[in-house]
Image (cartoon, rainbow, N blue to C red):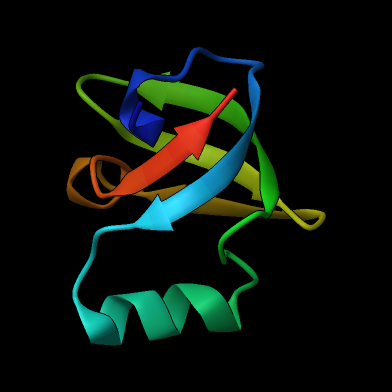
Length: 72
């Protein structure tokens, strides 16, 4: 499933990133890489989210959350 399908409060592990290379690199610098657990803090609309990654809150848009494959 993709991250935008996760529910508020869910803790999931990143399994694959389906984003362009520059965006993947930027997210990896922020700690969002494969096999990283993250928690969904808030969710609005079709995928605008605030997530907790390695103790840091990140706000991401729907286009990004749809490109992150996760496992429950």
